[in-house]
Length: 248
Image (cartoon, rainbow, N blue to C red; front, side, top):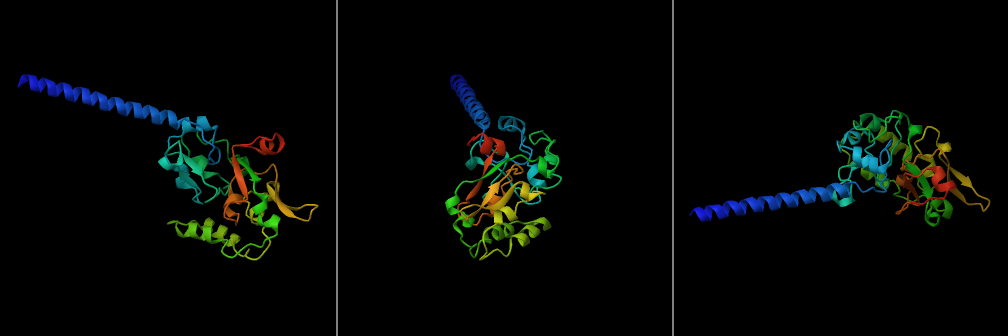
């Protein structure tokens, strides 16, 4: 009987050690994979990606204070950095709040508190990546139902902010018109410093990006084609993309 008890204790001991070892190994794997930098559109003020992943405590405070419901938290199905905040500009861009409340709410420094106003935001740069599908370039009127995605988004928000209602009102009334949505919906205090519809010598009007673009993603959100013709390149500046020719 004593031998049986001893063998049972040994079994439990080594089994427990084995389980703890596997858990530790899993933790290490998760930790190291979580430190892998991603080319994800982060909220305003996000520091360098690797530093961001190290500093972010995944508290969700930035998400809680965003009046436009622009910020999401990454889950296991969305790559590394589980629990970290990001913006999916296909769904909802950042509307460049004057006081940048998401930055003010960040307790860890993952969002740099030197980002104090809309013009301080540097999230990325807009690029007309698919001019062949751009309604302005192809001279195609804005189709019926172009606003359904935004209406559906608002319909699924439980605590709609009045600011979101104003955005929806501004977005209304474009059906059948020449598309200027990306420029008209730009939330920057001086939108013309970021984007404008420019008529080229060919007679085609197309969006043109300027240094004031902060990469907020609103142009990508409101682009009325199924795959947005204009997209954001995260963490690149105007100089990076349009002058130095860097590509992400």
